[in-house]
Image (cartoon, one colour):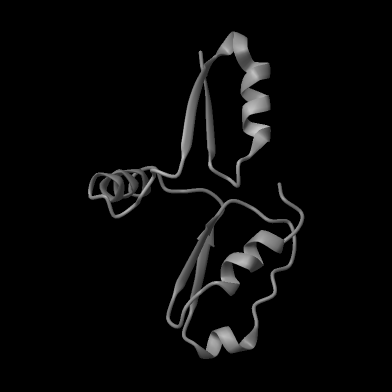
Length: 104
């Protein structure tokens, strides 16, 4: 679990008037939301996890419709025996563009 709200607050600070920020996961820290954002009609929502029944089909629908662009992601699949290489790949980061999976 993340114990700093820096990235969460950075995301909120980029909202346009009447914009929405959706967070999934956990940050074990207080989040500061400037009062002026409330006056702009922004919406901040989230959950600890996602709802498999509704969220996954909606995610795939967004991808199929091309509304959710994933061409910036660098995916790579590693076999289980290459777990050390997978960890190095994931640690490189590349500005959050890396997507690493290990197959069993």
